[in-house]
Image 1 (cartoon, rainbow, N blue to C red):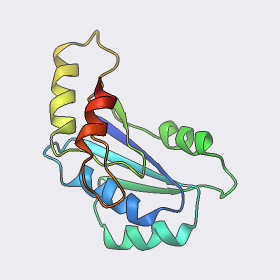
Image 2: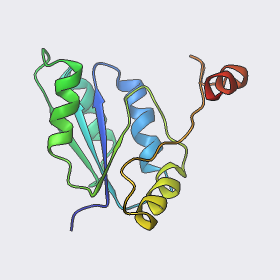
Image 3: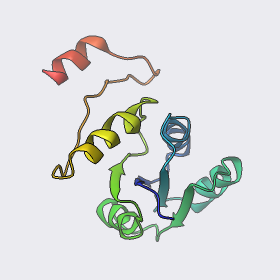
Image 4: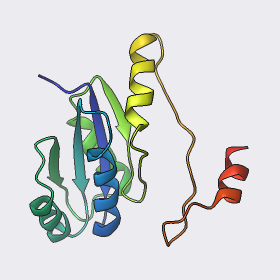
Length: 138
């Protein structure tokens, strides 16, 4: 059975951030998804992470290191099996309710082709920058 959502997660040499991004999906309160991690960086990074995160919902794809950012994203997108595709970059994280908020709204309104949620700006220490977030939201 195909998942309802495919999370496309392209990455390039940021294993620490990738682990946080991937964990934010896996620990969310929505379960009907797959994650396609497409790496065009050091393959040892994703191999080590794949060994630590053993979840059947995650597919790991290694691309050539000289594949550019766009082609890495498109390679992941080309193997998506979900009815919906959600894009998560390796330096971003989702709130636990991200998919459980957006997907039901898409299901209720089949004429809708895109859903978007606001976001928080986070500094290098992981703290939310409230003033910058509010300014960006406006």
